Structure formats: structure tokens, C-alpha cells
Length: 174
Image (cartoon, rainbow, N blue to C red; front, side, top):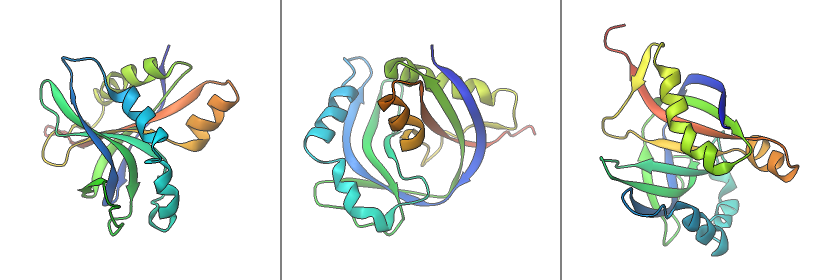
């Protein structure tokens, strides 16, 4: 069972998300796992190894979600990179302004369980604090796959952690 093992609110600087994108319709079968397989299989993810000079402090692969409505959203397999990072041919980008984000570390042994639990656990952690979800322009959430917390522990057969980020804003009544 997935559980939240860390939570914080932090300032995240302006950056550029670069990657490959699909549009997800929540009323249909989830295409995201197959999209990750495609991006690894066709070399899309390894392309970021050539862009190390543009890495931000947080430079793991990400699943970035935005443009959400009641039943659809855009999903980008990519990376957060410095704002001046060039966009390789065939990739898309989003310029993301500096924002406050909630960061949760969601731990478990089953990726599907972690992914399905991350949003709810993060929103639940916001309830008693000074922040609410920010749902205005440039709002997003992201699965962040940090090497030391996600990749390395899985290779050793241990519990692993997926970071989950979501944009927040100060509560109006506080």
C-alpha cells in the first residue's frame, strides 16, 4: 500500500518542461504506461542525457500533467530543464513560471498503486495547512522520478519513492 513519507511546500523556479506529449481521455483505457514504454523504446528519454548543461537541480524524468478539465489532460514524458533549454525537433515544451508547489514523497512497492494514490495523498496533506491547490493558468502536477529514491531502490528490490508535485497557493482566509 502506498503511503506519504514526506511533505513540504517549496518555491520552484521558472523552468522549461521538454518532452513528448499525449492527450489523455479519462473515460478510455489509460494510455500512459504504454506511452512511457514507447518513449523509452524509441530513445526519447535518453535524448535528455545530451542536455546535461540545461539540467535544473531537479533533473529526473517526469510525467507532467496540465490542461486538465473534468475528463481530459495533457501528459508529457520529459524533464524540467533551465528556461533557456533548446527544444529538440519533434519535442514539445511548456515554459513554467516560478511557483509554489507541494512536494510529496509517495512510497510503496507497486508503481500503479503509488501513481493512483499520489494525488489524493498530496491533496489530503494540504487540508490543515496554509495552502490550497492552485488551479489557475500554469497549474500543473508532476510525477518526478528521482534516481536515488525511485530507480536505485527498485533495482535492489526495495520499496521506492515517487515524488509528486502540484501547484499551490496561499489560502485566502489565512
